[in-house]
Amino acid sequence: MTERSLTPAVILVIEDDRQIRRVVQGYLEQAGHRVLTASDGETGLALAFHEKPNLIVLDLMLPGISGWEITQRLRRSRNPALATVYIIMLTARVEEADRVQGLSIGADDYVVKPFSPRELTARVEAALRRLDQAALTAGAQTLVHGELRLDPVHRTVTSEGAALDLTAAEFDLLYALMRQPGRPFTRNELLDVLQAGGVGGEDAFPRTIDAHIKNLRRKLGDSGRRNRFIETVHGVGYQLVRS
Image (tube, rainbow, N blue to C red; front, side, top):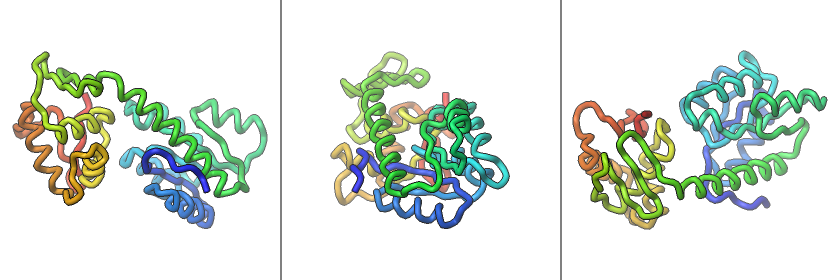
């Protein structure tokens, strides 16, 4: 049994072998994570850009776009969530030069087939723990988005230097959104943010988020037809507008 990471993650598995894909998905879901899968490079790359996973398990030899090309495209992305996403490469190649090349173009780890699903899961969990710790460390820093400044230590938010009077729920929602600009959050994910902070209430439901976001937008001066900070992602939830 592997040690659980601090928080459940969204993991994308891009693998053309159906049996390997299903086994890896099963192990990772058993570890408590949301797992997305793709059997070819183009579908996998599209999922990566749309879902912005926390970690990608990536086969090297894929139909269409190869694992090499997917890694290079992600690393060139202007979106920090994609440019820095943790990538574990899977490959049947055993030569050292291939492993070095995979790491040199941006892979974070390398697993050679055949592999133990339990070992892969352990590597995923270890990577996620490091990412969680890095996020906690980064969370102590003031976040800036345009004229907004959010201080997570003192739990204050200012706009053009003027303090905003936010409720605990509004602060926690804005904090989550500002940490990952451009990343769509579902209402359930934002509800988890509130409940993790002890302000959501056990009987809260996803549509509660809409009311909090409406009030937050009003306080941000963001209640017009064109939102400067928080925009609705139809069919999903909300995201912070990229600056």
